[in-house]
Picture 1 (tube, rainbow, N blue to C red):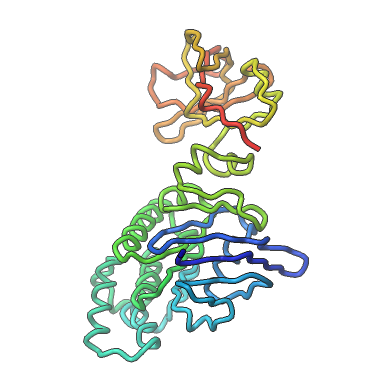
Picture 2 (cartoon, rainbow, N blue to C red; picture 1 turned 90 degrees about the vertical axis):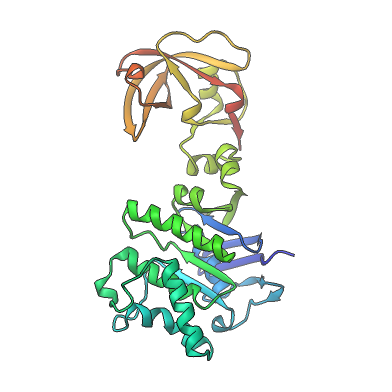
Length: 337
């Protein structure tokens, strides 16, 4: 039996049908991400598990127990928000210990041992006596994480907790959260609109769109095999071609939309040899933009534009207006709905 089950969850806010018959399961010990744009329902589903929102219909089951109507304080669920919600007049140590002291009566020795253990996990040595105002945003987020895991909840919920943190620190915290989750074996659900964050952290991704699940799967499968135009447009940087556009580029009519990843489009200054398993075409360089060690070219084949990602090597630096040749293997042209 799955550790967490959402069964046909519906939720409306007035005329807005935020969750539309959502059913999904989560296994114990997984880190699952609810991914999607703002307003798609992912945070609302998270809040139904925490008990902060009541579904209009459907059931939420945790570890075999129907908790749909259970008091949020009795669900043994930890939740971390974008806002850290730390007590400003309490030290780091006091903030971390607060939930533990409120949850149940424990011997002082055990409380001290747990505090020392989580401070070590979140790397806050030397900050135990600091007040929240004396900490950086990343340090405050780690205090919030420590405060949640010290109570040993059944499930840890993250509602876009890293959105306000700068990119470099955010990457470090993503890795730290994943490492802590794995080491504790705790089940976690992470809400984000950032596809890179979802790809890095998740065992499973559920992609949301307008209150429903568009596609679910492992990160690698979501990236390499999108099933719909929305999935291809949200995960990765696919070229999405209509049937007419695809025919204009390849000479073949698929009769459906086709998605092509930019990194699968090969580009060179001379024609490619003919292959049965690949499409070939001449193109004109319209523009290029650097993305780290990648150059992303915009190429035009007649009236159709394609993007191609090429490793940044000076011998492959093509100029706008230059004629080049492209090749893409047929297996990398994905039919989508």
